[in-house]
Image (cartoon, rainbow, N blue to C red):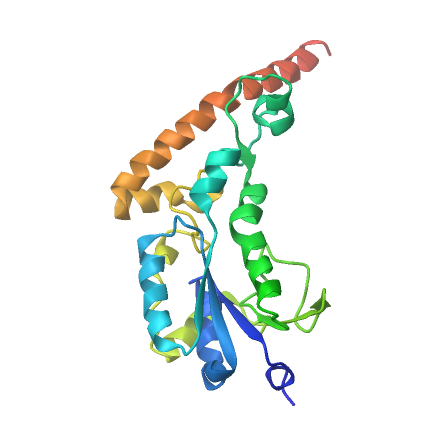
Length: 244
């Protein structure tokens, strides 16, 4: 008996990236048994929204979960890869006049992970299927077959590499989303000001110039917030060197 045959409430979590797309097509014979869930951050890229509209029309059951990104950013500040002390909630509570910011993983948790997990619990899901691979640089600690909080996890392509995923999608006549020409990961939020190593600026400049302008404005605000702390750090390092 397959793992799918052992469950009645099955969720395929779809991001629009190549790995979850590969899972979607691998599981075509089981579409009638599962529900496809997409976490719409509330600030999704237009090309990702268009892809999800196509998939929504393909599969029997499709659920869109709201991530409320604009509200989260309004409450906690934009995400950053470097958190200045006076932009941290504790610093702000203590009277700092810094720009409110949130660390990138905190933002992803609030917008992406927590709303999806809450929906899984609300819908009584007992099996979650994801496109997680063992060679992913950033991945959950759970592995294929693990059970956490009463929910089993199935990662059908855990042993695949990126080329195998690309080859499989090509064999199914599925073109890679265009963002893979520039970005390493599936983009979740158009206005995200974190994940600086992903090449977002070049992609936005080419395909979404208006969003690129707003993105650069956001980075400029973060630069102004971070710069004094970097300067103080460099001065401290230099002072230690000068004292040797």
